[in-house]
Length: 123
Image 1: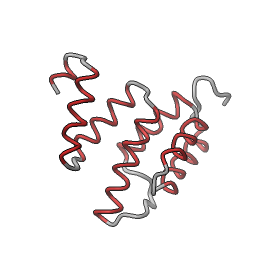
Image 2: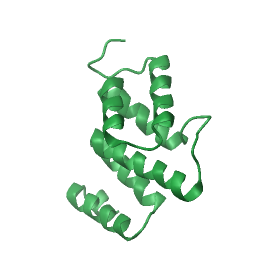
Image 3: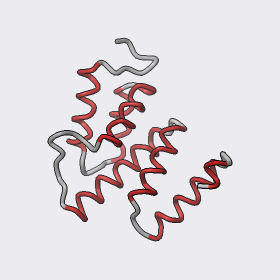
Image 4: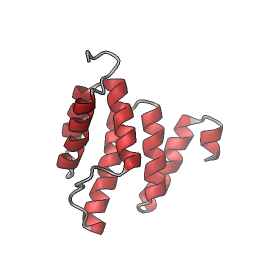
C-alpha cells in the first residue's frame, strides 16, 4: 500500500503478485483489479475478474449470479466498457477463457441495454 501511495506502479504490481502467489486473498485480488482498471489494462483486469470468479466457483460452489456479478466487480467492468467499448471487453473475456463467461456476458448485455459505449463507439 505504501507503493500505491508513492505511485510506484511496478512495485505495487510486484507486491500484490507476491501476496497472491502465497494464496488466494480477495482483498488483494480486488486491489489488483482496481489497480489494473485504473491503468486501463483491459486484459489484466479481465484476468483478475476471471481468477476471482473461478475461485468462487471452485471453493465456494457459486456457479451462477442471477442478479449479476457482485456490485464492485460489475462497476469496474462498466468502467472498462465505457473506456474501451463493449466489443473490446467482450474479446478480452473470450480470450481469457473464464469459466463464468455466462455471468460476464450478462454484464455485457446490461451494458448494451444501458448503451454504455466507449469513447470511440457510436451510441
